[in-house]
Length: 451
Image (cartoon, rainbow, N blue to C red):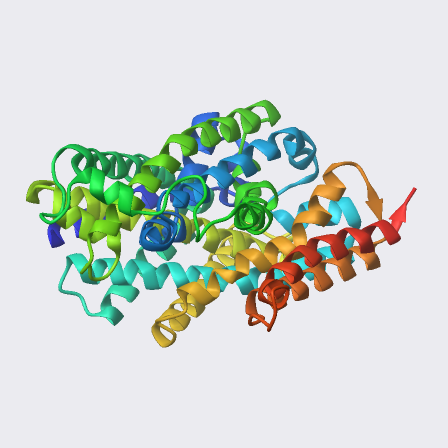
């Protein structure tokens, strides 16, 4: 097992070394020369979206959500489909990262706000992925947590700073294939090869909460999931960073559509595994690893180990580069007119430092995954409405856009942290604040609308 995992990590580094030879300038490094095919864009989107929270977290939620865990990926696919009509305008106005799009739509003030808010949240999410990768390595190897965290961070930081987007597009396609293969093999064996001794498969599936709705997942929960999770696939920085790599608008649209089509069946595979995991009453650690131990023959365990490691690394590298590209935006004036070798050196230094900060967070706060994932909801409350507003061709004064971002993000954060209050309405205080984040965000933009 150790040999298979280490060989895989070394292989990723070799891809990065090969990619680094082809990196000549900042466009190569940040957007892969804007030459990516639809297949490459789709593969990178799928690998990025099937991150730790989407796969490991959704399957772990089986006891509570059961088959409704499928909605995580279904809302992601819905978010991608909703992006397709906006793809042409986004591709036209974007350059390297989301703040470029924000500046072209609204001006420098809103760009500054986006450039301050996003890297902070995204560095935390990188740390969460390091934690997840470290815990997975600990499950399948004899590594301590510290060693596993350092190895994980070193590998994806190394191949990200070496080859930039060229590395990520190549490794993401491989990782997407591994993730999908691992999930399909695991589901097939769970369906046909084995069940816990005390239950039949039909008993397990009947015991688990059902799809589409159940006592723990109501239509209101779906609405909130679309609002706070699905919209990040329509207006999220990682999604735009994949799209900006496409060679043209038609390629970007095709890649997005291919990714959405891939996610829909995978969503139901994840939902099935979430339901199956309900039957593993004494499972320790990640439930997906417990399922693998239960149903797979020993020779196939390394495949699941590689698939799960790919789940985490494929999100970590994209998130790290997205955050670092945005930070590089602060230096863009200083980078203009200088030799490309210096520009690339600065970009790589920022990625290295960003990776170090994320690693330090992961080493100090080993239980922060759930807390950090609220960053997605806060991001959605802050940026979804302003981005879609601009992509619809509507205008707003920069100071109103900045205010909408700050107020929307603050309300979304309050909604995620607010405890339930007494009374029937009080129990939904957090939900009300989350919905208010989007409504007030739109209201502020409407107040500042320019004709």
